[in-house]
Amino acid sequence: MLPVLLILFFLVSLSGTFIVRKTVTKTNILDIPNIRSSHNQPTPRGGGLAIAIAWYITIFILLLLKEIPDYLFVALLCGVPITIISLIDDIVTISPKFRLVVQFLCSSLAVFLLGGINSIDLGFATLHSSFLFSIAAVVGIVWFTNLFNFLDGIDGYISVEIIFICLAAFILLGLELPLFLAAATAGFLLWNWQSAKIFMGDVGSTLLGFTIGVFVIYYQNSNQSSIVIWLMLTSLFWFDATFTLFRRWRNHEQLFKAHRKHAFQRIVQSGFSHQKTVIFSILINIPIIGLVWLALEFPDYLLPVFGINIAYLYVVMKMVDKRFPFKKA
Image 1 (cartoon, helix red, strand yellow):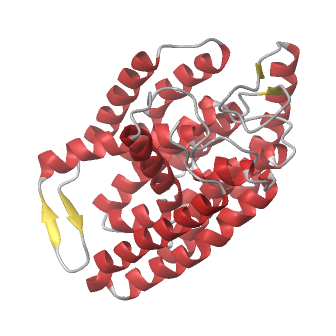
Image 2: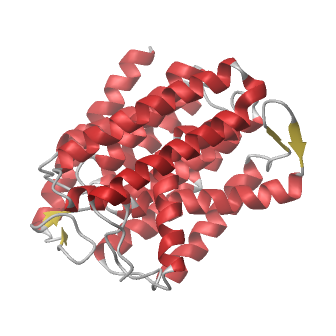
Image 3: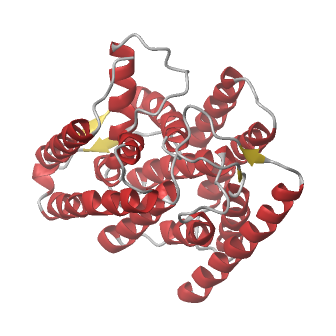
């Protein structure tokens, strides 16, 4: 049953992306290159709508089959307003402040439906602070929603990372639901691989970030995995986004101004193609898989292994700096 459903939702995404591409091309909804862009030609955008449609069909069918609990289904549906607002923003610009308010409201509702976070498993100990952890969970989902959007800048990058995270969650943790998100994303990836025939747009990247954030909380609460494990699985993305934001803040830059200073963008500027950069990201993720396995095998050392994960990515960042320095201006 599982393989059949995965193939079905992959085909829904694949065909849906084709339909969306035809539609946005006719209506002239194009991504025009700007200072933040890593592409040179106007390209149709909004392909993430196909991912969204495939994903929401997926969880509805899984609910009917009683494969996911009701409260998780409703929590995931909290991403619908974010998806709608992001789709509109792909067509006509919406105030970032308004988008942020919507994201906080949706994330707060999702955390409430998931029961908040009562504890966090650190391997050697479990911390309890329901109020503080729940607030952190809301902020975390909002941050994931936006950082996936920030890092959607080159062909295939965000899609491959989502597929990596979801496959790793299945292989290492035995979690099946992420596989369906991977299937919906894979259908779009075939259209987005270099040279991309369509871009995901905010409608796809924000939904993916929100959904991964909900996964993190749900699986922590159901004692199927620790938040720290998910932070490791997603570390390539959030480390780049967070460290880059910190460096820009330290340089007194306008944080909402478009830029091309993320590690993946600087790799492309140094001469790598989009395809080579994505393959490079896969190679970077392989040792992280090993570290996650180590943390699962030796849970008492979860935090030290997590520290090694961060140190490893810091070294990678410094290697990128040598190839294409992080400029102050």
